[in-house]
Amino acid sequence: MSTTDLPPWKSSLISLAVSSGILTFGSYTLKSHRVSPYFVNCGLFSRAKLIRAISEAYAQSLNSYAQEHSGWDFDVLFGPAYKGIPLCATTVEKLAGLDESKWGDVGYSFNRKEVKDHGEGGLMVGESLKGKRVCIIDDVMTAGTAIREAISIIESQGGKLVGIIVAVDRQEKMPSQSEKDGKGDDGSPRGSTIGEVRRETGVPVMAVLTLDDLIVGMRQLRREDEVKQMEAYREQYKPSD
Picture 1 (cartoon, rainbow, N blue to C red):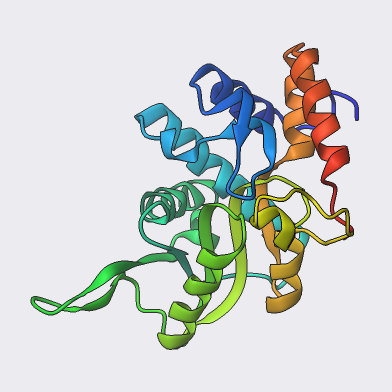
Picture 2 (tube, one colour; picture 1 turned 45 degrees about the horizontal axis):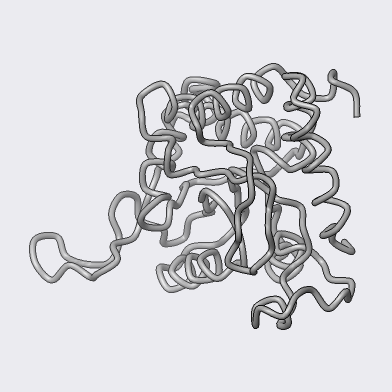
C-alpha cells in the first residue's frame, strides 16, 4: 500500500488515536487468547475533541457508502447499550451537518439494559424502530455476539436491519474452538467475524478503520517497527474471505 491510500480524515483519526492512547502497541492477550501487537480502546473516545473526531468519522463513512450505493439509506441509527449510546447520538448530528436535506430527519435510538417499569417505561429510548430501516452503530465486532443481540432487539421492535457500522475491523479470521480453549490456533482456514455477519444478515457491514488502514497510517507516521508487527499479525491470522 502507498501512503496515498487513506483519505485525510482517516489519517487524522489514526494520528489522534495514537497521540491520545486509544491506539496502543505492545503485547495484548485477547479474549481469543491470541497475542496482538496492537489494541484499540474505543472506550477512550471520551473527551470532547475525541468523540467529535470518531463521530465525524462514522458520519463520513456512512455518507460515503450512501453516495456510492444508490438506494441505500436508513431512518434510524441504533446504538446498543452502553458504548453505542453516545455513538448513535453524536453521529446523527454529524450526518446532518454533512447533508441536512438527506440526513436531517434521521433519528437515533438505543436500548436499556433493564426494562423500565415506570414513567414512559419500556426497553427503548429515542426514535421508534417500528417500520423503520435501521443501521446499527457499535465500536468493535469480535465474536459478533453483541451485534446479533442488537439485531434481535431491532426485529422485536418491528424494525428492518439495513446496515451495520463499527469503528475497527481487525480483518482476522474467527477464533477456532481450540483457541477459545486456550490451546492455540488449529490452522484451519476461516472467514472473518464481519464476513460471517455479512453473510448471515445480507446487509452491508462497514468499518471506519481496518487493520490495513492502521498499517498505512502508522507508515505515514514512520512507525516502521509497529508496521512490521501488524503485518506479521495480519499474515498469521488473515481470514479466508
